[in-house]
Length: 149
Image 1: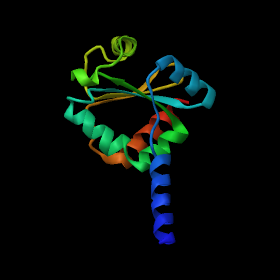
Image 2: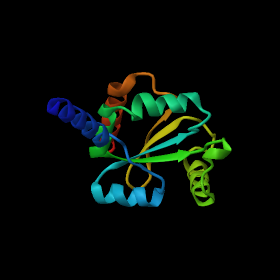
Image 3: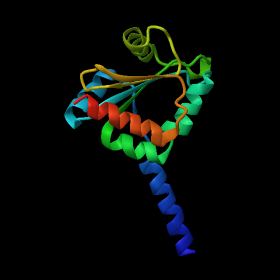
């Protein structure tokens, strides 16, 4: 029984340590990225209506492998544009997301993911669902990050 409890506790610990913290305030994300010498990964999503967005969050961003990489290298920012009334954002959050869309996603593509340096300069962009899996995405991130130095 003790072994079972220890195993469950370890599973929960590994799950909670792999959870990504999504920043909603871009100014704060830039400050964190500067202070921690990280890049910013900005994702535009429609969390309650965009199938490819939902898949991207589940199959790429929701994995332990990606979470471990992100923890050491990225400040994650989600600019979400939900449509269902029950998922509506606060007016302030919606204004912040609209401002990000005006600056970085004026064509309104979903999902749309950008790797930015700490100053907000675009290093690389991915339009749509990333089809080459987590290892491929991490590899592309590493190449872009090393190429920007």
